[in-house]
Image 1: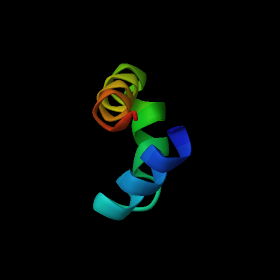
Image 2 (image 1 turned 60 degrees about the vertical axis):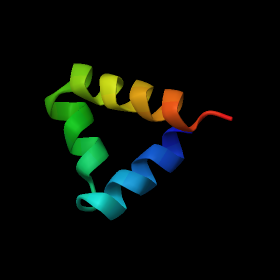
Image 3 (image 1 turned 45 degrees about the vertical axis):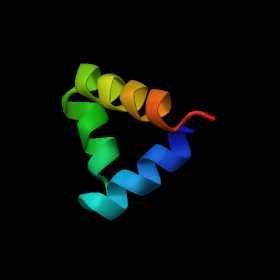
Length: 42
């Protein structure tokens, strides 16, 4: 699921967005990943 999240955010924002967010704002990254996982988990 993490790989899909990273790929999607790279397409929506810019390449490296998820990695930059994880570095600069780890709590924000975890929050966005959790929301993504909750919304798209099957």
